[in-house]
Length: 453
Image (cartoon, rainbow, N blue to C red; front, side, top):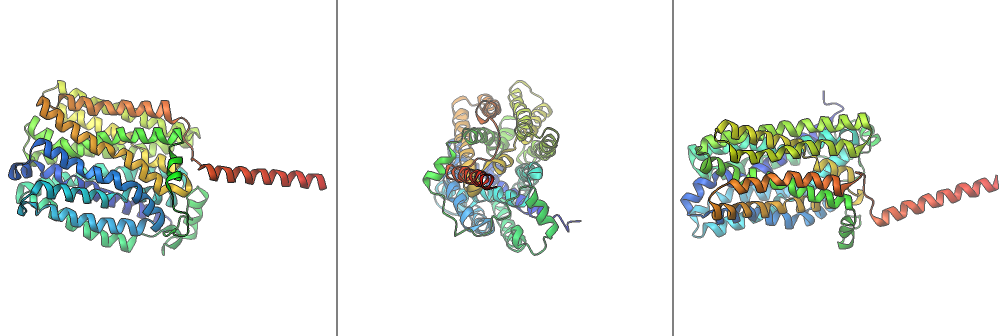
């Protein structure tokens, strides 16, 4: 069945890595209620702990993207996976240390650094393994890992917390991450060196625009320096994509950080029930995330317009996310869960960011572009948990927190339509100059040949 589809095995592998990455960063949101009570952590301290991961995640993304371009996806993801899994395990032992808050702050910060390569590596993997006509599905399946993670791991972590205590949430997740690192090391390969890939599959993905010449190690390439990174911000299209990703991630970070607390403290669920209930919007997000891949690729085949194929699902999905504000005006728990599920379905359906990065990033800077994209997007992980924490402290209610989060979907849609414009691969100025020069030389050669004939 998979004789000529090794690319989907690779996609499954990088998707599982993101699933664990998202699960590990969500450990604190599930264990937070019991941990904060036992360790005496305030709401504002919890807000800082939620955001400390994102501070490091943002700061590390551009260096991580550079490392991915320099060393390749295999080694950077392997090193990161081992190190962040160790940090996850150590968080379960902070109760034995005098200053638990400082220890947690440091470990969450280190986790953010070590998880940073996953996003840039995924953009590189999709660009080199998948033709343009399949990138929508590939990117959507990869992106759906964050919802799959919440659907699978939130109930598991809730059960571990309820049955054994919050410490075991961290130890079990860390152990599973180390097992995954062994699997990644054994199974991941780039197209040119994969022992099982067929010539037929290689030709298929090359003909479709896959960048199969992005080798695992590119040490001979010129390292992306500051001026080249600044060139990315000369593209209005990329800037609009970056802004939209910030807004999309703000919605994600509400679900990853404060949503279980909302269910427990606002809606009165037990931590065990909250874990299972929180999986319902996550499952809806997973369905939306997978569905949009097929929709965008179908639109591309029918319309031939990459811009239309990407923007239409983004618009429909992200406008749906604002329905979460309606939770402020209903009392029935089933209506709250239904609205949150619809909002998260929309968030999944509108999250084509990594597909768009694979479509638009300069060939020489795919990892770096992914790093910048994810760094800006995850600034929401710094800002959103903190603002929600301060809103809760000031008002004692989630009312304005939901308004704040829900408005981000509308802003993301405006960014795609008013700023992004046409979606196409961006060429760095020097690359564009070389291409223009080559065209001029070719035209001159044709003219010269005509004159001599």
